[in-house]
Amino acid sequence: LDKLHWWQKASIYQVLVQSFQDTNGDGKGDLRGVVERLDYFVALGVDVVWISPIYESPMCDMGYDISDYRKVNPIFGSMEDLELLVQEVHQRGLKIIFDIALNHTASTHEWFQTSRKARKNPSLGKRDWYFWSVGKLDDNGNRVPPNNWESTFTGSTWEYDELAGEFYLHIFGKNQPDLNWDCEEVRQELYSVLRFWLDKGIDGFRLDTMNLVSKTSDFPDAPISKGGCHWQPANYLFANGPRIHDYLQEMYEQVFAHYDVVTLAEMSCGVTPAQAVEYTSRHKPRPELNLIIQFQHVELDCHDGDKWMLREWELPELKRVIAEWQETLVNNGGWNTVWMENHDQSRGISRFTTNSPRFRALCAKLLALWQFTLQGTNLIFQGQELGMVNPNTFSEDMNQDIETVQYWNAACEDAIDGESHKLELAKKAIVQKGRDNTRIPFPWSDDPHGGFCPPSSKPWIPAFNHESEWCGAHQQRCPESVWSFYRSMILMKKAHPSLYHGSFECLDFDNPLVWAYKRRSKHTCYLTVLNFSPGATSWRYVDHGVDLARSKMLISNHQTCEATFTPDIILLRPFEGRLYQLA
Ligand code: TEU
Ligand code: CA
Image (cartoon, rainbow, N blue to C red; front, side, top):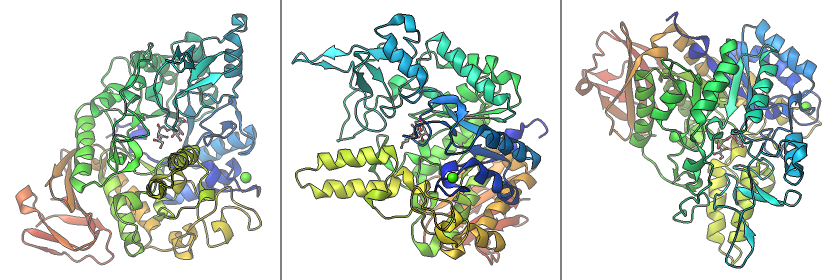
């Protein structure tokens, strides 16, 4: 156990700074706000604070469009505020990691501005810092993009730039041109940016879209999407590309090897458990990354990776995805991260259980039991520990997110001929999946705007559901609250170290209602049993080689939990979950 790194034992708490705590009344959360709330993290028991991008940015994509990597965005505060935050975090025995996007910059970045001019005037330098293409001629002799790739935020990944007289590549928004990592100078410059922040004493990075930085050089067309998907499968042509391992190894050797820090790399657009082992294995001669964030479990509710094409799913599918990740990484020297919501995803309760208010607290606790008894480093997104749910309403002026706005505009254009059913589907998808679902202000108290900003200010996006019993202040005082349950689960994991590294074994795969699994290390074995259904049910443990007679129930999400099992069956109430330590 002493061999575990701090980041393997840590619970990481993600703060979306803009929606956390506003201190100067401009309706946007800021760094001073995070400083003011640091004791909240201590009370909850988390170890690491992950802050969303706070660099200079035109804020077209929540700061994932960076225009100067070495400057602090004034809407969040100053460099002094940031240094104060790092210092105050450390004073409390916590750690802090920064979120940074190295795959692309903002189009307003000086690098991109130079690059576009340099296409016609090479002496300016930075000519190849981005991906440029003259495109091709279509049948009518018009100049069109070199291939058919569609961007994550709808439309072509190629945008024509007048000044350059060429197209540039952007996998995300057109204001987020992709950096060309094949260019040595680009990599060196980015490494020096990383060192700049590490030298300020931060404890690591969440690296945005890190598996996208090596692209195939010839930009072939992607297969045409089937079934009216807005998103076609071009991802395998730009994710996990040909030189990705070289670059990650180089980055490790030139930067991270020299610090005791964690790298938490987001791997969007598809990564398999086997690839994840490649990226994170501790047994490799040339290490790359510590942790990765994968997405397979949040892609079950859509068709072909198109997040807006909603799809019904069954519990056994979720079990299979999770089991494959758990087993593959544990058995091969990798290490999982376990998460269910973030600033790009909607709320876990609304997605994995039910929106019914009657079950809200139970479901929140069920999911906490689930998340904290799986193998891996736990990531919690702000408000998850309060059992926040999707607002579940649609209003056009609530849509702030670039992805949602562009999808909605495209849907409106597409439905011109009064095809109102198309718009209804789009609305439904946005309500269920839109990124603004988790971006609304944090409900601290039952003050106006949930105490997020002064009463006279207007939050940048409307606050929602800050009913007093669900707000942070109330839940912190109430031992039965979701918040208190999260705290218990965080402490539970620390008290039972086998939950960090024990093996994972899924029982009764095909059971559509109950999810049961064992976690085992040399001396201890744990059993988690979760009823994912709104009805009472039972689970037969004898068939699965479990002996409950001499075992101890450690925690349950039902307040009074008598030993409801007959000699070989556990009776479970709606959405009931339990954790046993087996003798
Ligand atoms: O996300 C990368 C990504 O591909 C997905 O998570 C994507 O945003 C999602 O599927 C869209 O629904 C990262 C950031 O987390 C996200 O906020 C940024 O918009 C994106 O990169 C671009 O920097
Ligand atoms: Ca502010």
